[in-house]
Picture 1 (spheres, rainbow, N blue to C red):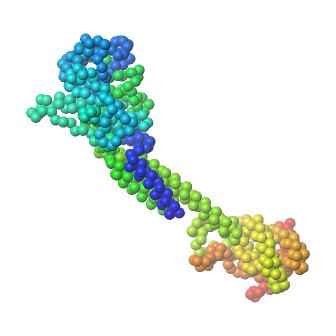
Picture 2 (cartoon, helix red, strand yellow; picture 1 turned 180 degrees about the vertical axis):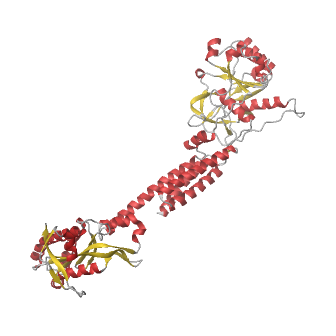
Picture 3 (cartoon, rainbow, N blue to C red; picture 1 turned 120 degrees about the horizontal axis):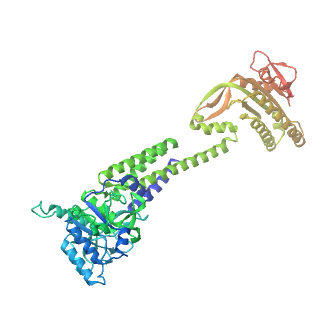
Length: 592
């Protein structure tokens, strides 16, 4: 079984390592990352959203609005001197109104701190390294020149359409395009340092990225958590302009009708608007809250360590305790992953957990399959020699059931023997003798097993059976008598057949005695028998020698246990070989 278990372990660990190397995330990776790693916190008060919501659309008319409205909004909030103003709205081509475009360009230029969006299109699969865009949707030329910065707003959803990562930068025709949030953070850092540093603004620390240039978004705010004002209310002047002083103001769609919302780790069911996602990224950059996904080699090492522990535990320990160890290992992995995430390292634990679960169930199935085949093999082999009860006891006890040793108990022992077998052997062909023996032994075994006895052994033409072992039985003496009478009845049919075939009578003699004896596995470590020993066994054997052909001789001790249930002849005294004193016995005539 160990070799098979190691083979299963090797196959599963090989598959898991390949998937880790190829970078295929598992659903469990996503689930753990969302439930365990992503934790809701306090939204940064330096970030304020202005939402294009249903109220604004109702007040200002059908979307899209004239760009002069955006110019008016920007002029209004700029009087309050915000640190950065960012639009999550694209202006790729000039509008049909040159005056509106001119007012919009002028407002952006005068503000001097506006970040405008762009977005790229990509091939379905990318090579590892810096991502290259096929096309780029920049603001129209005059607007782009007026903006303080341009950053991309591409949303990178995973296979399950949940947004967990974003692209820090990509290339387009040799130009490096950073994320909108990166440009916002860069301008905000410059705003804070413009009066404090004689050397000018410093460069913010970029988040660590994976081989495709993506970084983990440590979401803080859930949908609706960041402070948001309606676009229309700000335009009306309901919010004083100085409220936006030194803040990061982000403007974008805030209604489902504009189709700019996505599920996020903190809430799979309530989509988050794109402007809120960008706000979460900005907050992570402001706080240097970066999470680095470990290289696949470290994840593979974790997988191997978990796999080695699993193989050790599942091979040596009972399935129930293995399940406990499985829970402990999974708990340690989850706890360790959470602790590392707090230190800035994201360790995907999906494959180690999936491997542990898969290997546990594979080990469990293999164990039960092995036990089933072993039970079947043992049953097939030993069921031919011993009673089913003995086989079951060996299978239940396992190795313990095969240890040398015995148990002392009151047993009923029955011996059966063919009368005249020696002369029969001398006058008949060996094939005929074997046929007689087989029919006789089959009858004896069938009758003993029917009454729950244990067929101890065949001794030439004699059969030894015991009752009340290995399992305790009520009325074990009566069961022995019933088995003996069943043999006597079946023997009558065999005797008639044998007489016709061999020309001579073949009859049985049966002796039954009850008393204390020792039974169990007796012998050497290399060769043992499940048998009973003691004076009770010897007495039963000697009693069978004195039984007349076709008769059942029952000792006085045995008769005392079935008196009133069994009809017997008058008692007789018998001198048994090896016994100094005669014993009293009865011939069984039937059941009462």
